[in-house]
Amino acid sequence: MKANSTFTTWVLSLALAAPIANSQAQDKFKVCADPVNPPYSTKELTGYENKIAALFADQLDQELEYTWLPDRIGFIRNTLKAENDNGEGFKCDVVMGVPAGFELTETTKPYLHSTYVLLIAKGRGWDDIKDPNQLVQLPEQRQQKLKIAMFDRGPGTDWLQQNGLLDYGVPYQSMTGDSEHNVAMQIEKDLRAGKIDMVILWGPMAAYVQNQSSKNGYIAIPMQSAPGTRFDFSIAMGIRQGDNQRKQQLNDLIDKNLAKIQAIIADYKIPSLPIPEKPAKQDDD
Image 1 (cartoon, rainbow, N blue to C red):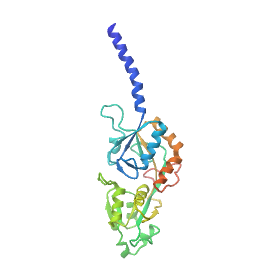
Image 2 (cartoon, helix red, strand yellow):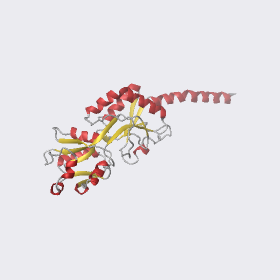
Image 3 (cartoon, rainbow, N blue to C red):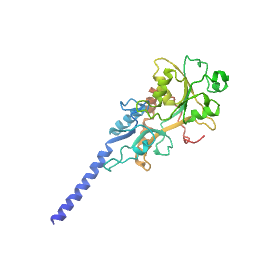
Image 4 (cartoon, helix red, strand yellow):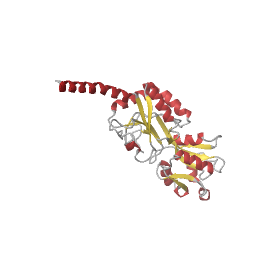
């Protein structure tokens, strides 16, 4: 009888502990993020994704908790899909910004649609450029003076190649491997130093560069998508595949707070376009 009594007590304790553990898990809004990735996220919580995460956590009455890791190859595997060391649950549950339809995660509905921008430093002999196609039509002697950032991959590089401008590019990596500077920070530094005069940069990063200037020091020309090269993309939130309850919860929060989200994004002066009803996939033309 004593053994049976002990067993019954053990079963009851497990039954009581389970909902408590589950409740504790639900008390946290667990975000996977890069600690040095302005304007998206920073450890000082100054990025716009930080602000959106804080908004959601507040509305859910949950504690906001971050798992920090540089956004490099393996980021999703080592954050969103990584189990805790004790084998109980995952390190984090939400990546606040991924391309809509991102193949490595399930994605929510989009909350932002932006475009790449041709950013030109003023006062360096290029102030007459009002359209990217003017670069293509320049005399060769003037094209040879171009100092335009050229990434190892991306639609900007595709556009340069299609228009015969690749030889005038200054090479950059899409992932810096620098723990102190992300791509936007490096580009801003090199533009200021005169290492480059212009760059085709993703909208949020272009906005970051512009915001670092104490005066209106840049010409910003939105790039237009065309057959073969897409410049505009929708951004959603990433979650684990099969995490349908969380996906619905986040979709509801996006619907409820879209005006507030757009206001946060507007504070960062990020170029924002209407969100398409059916966002194009990453590889769509």
